[in-house]
Image (cartoon, rainbow, N blue to C red; front, side):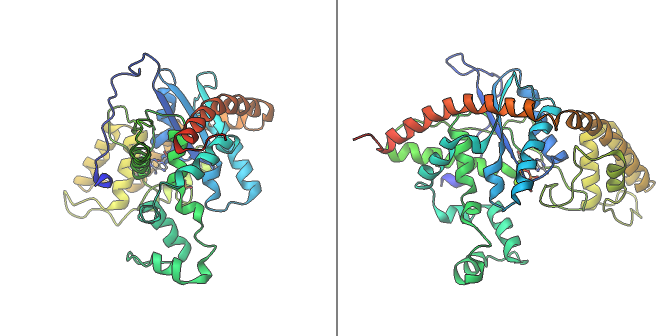
Length: 370
Ligand code: ATP
Ligand code: MG
């Protein structure tokens, strides 16, 4: 079954395609709020590291943000904020194409076409859809009552919208319209990326063409990562309210870290580490480095650990990462002229690529002039 295929391992030792052109990198972030450390380590930091060697294109996913019905003013502000955060984190507009998803009408049209090859069953089985639908419907159990609730209960008509269900189609189109080779994303997006490969393969096989190739995640040889939240479980996420934001000021950040969930502390040497404490170690690995984490792991193992000290160190090291970025965000986020020039240029270039793909897709599907 194609769904069970394991993710192909990226052949990551060359940044060139066989024809000598640079490989295409594509990724985006939803404009659903400020960027946090999860977005930074899962995605943005990789974007920045790739910008010199690849043909890289990064967008702000405002159409994807619509799936959770944002307030219009907040959506607009968030698009600007994320662009400023991209730039502040080090994305150079001269080295990358930066654009806003909704500026590219070809994406919306291809999304409609691609949906004809996507099954609602496979969409309903997607983990992120199940999570978000469960939340919207107030289902707390893990059992699969979702279909029954959605189909059987008219009160739910607007609560789980079709855009949320077809999110993976739109994401596939974002990627396939560029014929991207690499898609640097966090671990939470790997299932969507697998669906992208599946839809591309299905399109090829239905029409008997060899048109789309298979994009893969990119992690500089390591594993895809999931940055945990400060609330003791799960992932740091804009919609979870458990984030350290790049824009947090010093006081706010320290306060959040000092309040992070822990436990009563180890009472016996070499006790297993609880999830909330493991989360803090994971965060520390990212911002402080392994030596610092080893020191605290050792203190945990011999029961001498004081969580207050761990948190102080963690906050200190997070601030070293976030404060310079925060300063640059503040410097550029109100420069409307600069920001709008960047996305205008980005849209023009993206539309050239997108129009070419859409034209070819329409032709393959039989939508031809009479
Ligand atoms: P939302 O809660 O609105 O879905 P989000 O915080 O999950 O927002 P996205 O815009 O969905 O952010 O994701 C943008 C990028 O950041 C993706 O590549 C995703 O994999 C990555 N990302 C998001 N959260 C994390 C995390 N906790 N750890 C690693 N990567 C993450
Ligand atoms: Mg997300």
